[in-house]
Image (cartoon, rainbow, N blue to C red):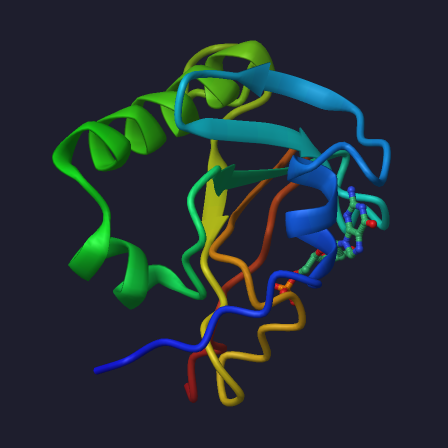
Length: 127
Ligand code: 5GP
């Protein structure tokens, strides 16, 4: 399906250097930076440098090199932030909000890395 990428979104502006960010990691195809409104002691965003709207767009159209780089960058961010299970802060949650029902505010593909506290159940158990 065609994806309509808005190059005026806030992460596109960060990638172009028009808005500052606190960079955690930069690789050939990926940028990781601190979320401006953290919801946990660790809250880092990982974005591909390419113009992808959401995860399914990225998975469908990104090159193998971009996909490998992105996934390795996520793992490296987890090591940098010391949230890898068994490494200090005891694990993390990855979230990729996509589209309206996913409550995605910024239409540039991104993964949230959340940690530094117990994140609670994502979907409460009914019993
Ligand atoms: P979404 O709801 O799209 O999954 O998450 C977007 C995230 O981007 C939010 O957690 C929000 O705090 C973060 N954010 C929005 N604007 C900026 C900004 O200008 N700089 C940074 N670093 N994060 C931002």
